[in-house]
Length: 308
Image (cartoon, rainbow, N blue to C red; front, side):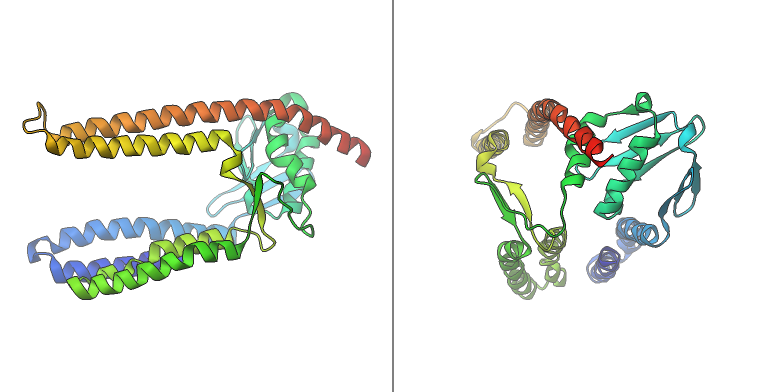
């Protein structure tokens, strides 16, 4: 809802500014272009609202029924030929029969329902038809079983407790700074659209604050994670080198190629190196998760045995 309202406010503000500033012969084309961008973001927000009210998942008897905004699918667990466990941070499950397929996004459900769905499908679908269970068990299933909503998170020495007040202390000063700066800039340069300057930090603050549980959550310190620390150092060094090279071009009297061409080439090289470094780090982290997943699977199976 907030995203939908924000898109409408942006559309109204941009249209008013175009009518006041743009030449008459270009107003219509600029309004259509800006309106299409705002309509895109408003459509995403509207689709999320419709999904919230109409999308559901029902497991009843021998049927898995997924009701979407437009379509309804029914799958029989006995006819499922492939179940792929998606080991993303929020977790997902892909189900496929000979004629149909669907994806269950676990982040749409409370923790107790997520665990129930995982245990149900793990027991109902033959194990040879399941893919990616080990890593999913380590990253999603076992943390769901360990989760206790009443327990207060206690960080270790290399961890930090993130609470909502922490985001208030970090981001509210920036909101105030952008608000004052936007007001002064709008008054000084007679540009009313600069009054929207605090919207971006405000959206960041709201998203971070309300995505953090009330009791807080534990996160590893960057200083304790060697890979993340080296990656940030690498990004900082690359950024400094990029800025130095760009500024150094100004002291070259007659460069062999245009400055825009050199900037484009430097940007392409910078992104290529960043992607290569990111791929290497993700590959190393994936290897560590696979090694740790063996113990997680053993703990899961031991829990099932004790429960039985």
